[in-house]
Image (cartoon, rainbow, N blue to C red; front, side, top):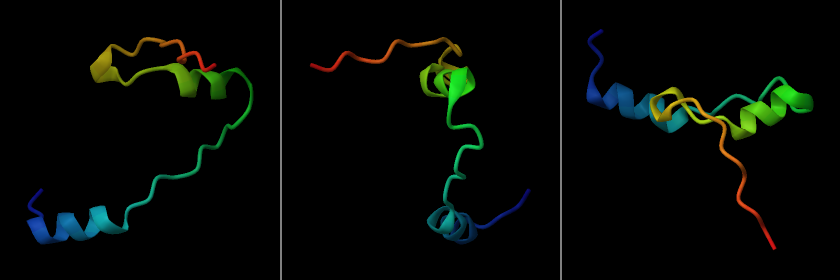
Length: 50
């Protein structure tokens, strides 16, 4: 796909992530804890806060 650098910059500037469809339950927990595929798609424990 041939898209100019200017067009890509304009698209990035106006892009906003979608709100998650699932916000409660186990799938929401999984979504918060799993890493991306390029990091191994493993579950990481949240850091402990005092």
